Image (cartoon, rainbow, N blue to C red):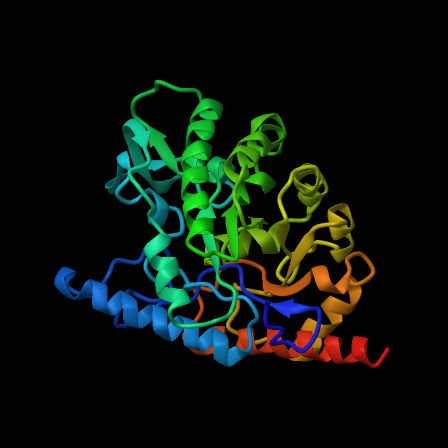
Length: 351
C-alpha cells in the first residue's frame, strides 16, 4: 500500500535527479566529474544516495528516487559499461535538433550494443534499504539515447538503432520491476523536438521498451534542463504546441504515467486533457531558477489541473531534474511540492 504523505489522493514527487554534494562532484554542471578518488567512490556514492533519500523523505515526497547520485549523467548511467559504447572518449555531435547549441559531447557507439546485465538494480536496492516509500527509477528513452550517441559503425539506421536500445532498455526495466521498483520512468525530451520521428518510430520504440514490464511505467517529456542555454531558449521561444502532438502520441500507448513541464514555459495546463486515464506528473517547479515556489503557487497549478485529471491520478512534480540547483533550493522546492499538494488535499477532504 502506497503511503499518502501529502495527506490525500494528490501526491508529490520529482522527475528524478537532485544536486550532488560538492564533495562528490563539481556542482551546477551536467556530466560533472567525480571529485572522489576511485577507491573511495563506492562509499561516497552510498553516502550521497542516503542524503538524497533523506532530503526527499524530510520534504514529504510520496514517491522517491535515488536522485541519480550514482550517475554522472542520466543517459550515461545506463550506457556505462554496456558493450560497444564508449562513454569516456567523447566526441561532439549535433543533438536535440540544435535547439540549444550546435554540438554537444556524446558517447561513441563502436560496435554492436549489448546488455551485459542490470545497470541500475544495485542503485534501486540501495534506496529500498533506506525507505519504505515507493521508489521510482529513471532510464533514458530510446530516442533520446540514439540522439546522444555518435554511431561510428554505421550498421543501422537511426530508427533501427532506437529499436535495438528499446529492447536493451526493456531488459533493464524488467530487472528493475523484479527488484521492486514501484515505477520505471523513461526520459524522452526528444519527443518534443523530433515530432515527425516520434510519430514515425519514437513511440513504437517506447512501446517496445515498456512491453511486459511488471510495474508502473512512465515517460518524462520536457523542454530541457535548467541550464543557461536551455533557459535562454525557453525565454525566447513563443511556440509551445509540441505537447499537443507528443502527448497525443503517448496517450495511445500503454504507458501509465506522463511527466510534463509547465512552470518554466508557456504551456497551458489544459493540454493534459489529452492524457485522460493516465497519471499526470505536473511540472510546477522551475528547475532553472534558485527562487523557490511557494506552496500556494503549487496549489494553484494543481487546482487548475483538477479540471482535466482525477486527483488520484495527479502528482505535484518538478519540470525536470533538479541537478543544476543548489541543495538548499532543491530541498525547499521539494517541500513546496509536498505542502502545495497537502493544501489541495485538505480542500478536497473539506468538499
